[in-house]
Length: 456
Image (cartoon, rainbow, N blue to C red):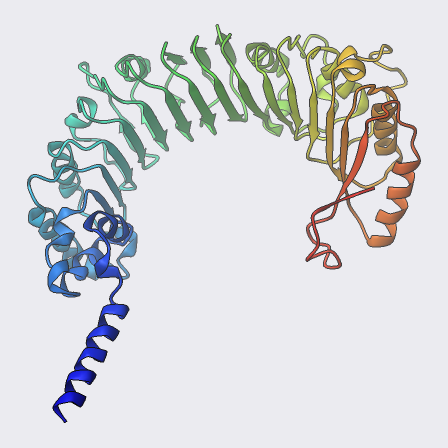
């Protein structure tokens, strides 16, 4: 009997040991796992086992989000949990990342106290999303924190960001600003000049209606993302000699100036229909295209009902361009102009439908040199076999002498795709090395379990 009990006890211990494999992990790994949980669940892990009792107090990534609170009546309880958690943390454990997202539950007067707590523990990454209307008194320490490397700040549309006279973030490398309004031009100048190590800047949906000029001047900046500004009576000026990536998603501005972007490697340009609906769009669009003319890779998206690239002087020379992605469709004359101005291009990519254009004349009679001697890869991801689309394909295959790979994704029903495949395959190819590839439609159930590409 005693032997049976010992055997059963040993079996239970072995089973429990196998079931609790999580506790066998190192503390560092467990802390990384529980830091992904909502704050309330992090605190609850203290009751799982004796070893877990104090683990929550060692968490260095803190995530406070009042969206996790189901009812507003539970707000006081949630705020008390947050403050007890912060008070219970080990004082010798710093904070790596502090994320605060509030708008429904948290009282405004507690926000700066929690931010000050994070700053006191030498936080490196600060992510603040404050959706409280009229919240303008952001903790002054945010603008002078020496340990801060990443700052993400998004506020309610009615909030105004006033940058203090003394502003210095010496180690800040990444800055995200969204849904806010700077008090004046001086605040913007102080904001960018005080970030002496800044490498990446995101400006998203910021209101600039009270500004004359949005000026981004920074010698260390490498990546810049601009999108969705509110207001069109302002100018944008960018001076960034070391910029390597520029992304612009915008709908209109009074003036645009890109200065000294000679290090630019990649540019992503989106010009929306609002800009094209205005009478005097050409100067802004021309300044934008000229500013990114030194890029090696260009992603171009233009939404317009007319062949906008045929505007005289709009398309500059792209002496370094090797990769061109046209998310705009475009017509053959527009393509010819872009190719003619890109002598080093070797990859051409189009992700949207091609367009017809009948103006009775050809804008460029001469075949672009890059198409004859440089382009090796062409991809068309929206091909329906329309006559003007076939005209573009025929032109490319007939003139691309060094083309190695021509990829096309066919649209429509299977019978139509089969017909188009035969027509494309029958087209003459000047390059003997050219391989034709057909990408299968993503919605094609017949080929659901087969590779996404096959030879034509």
